[in-house]
Length: 76
Image (cartoon, rainbow, N blue to C red):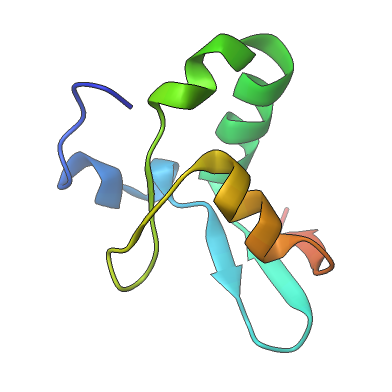
């Protein structure tokens, strides 16, 4: 989000998850935060920039398009 540094984005709490390449996206704790924003504060979504593993920037909609069609799994 605005004001966050790239270093702070690397914290586990900000990690969205991992596409294993087998049709499954293993969600991390950051995906729960993102989904809460979608549900409760969608006006803040335009302020979010997502970095992939190669540090390419994605919008929330671009990220959701990438995981569309994948099974989303969460480790409890």
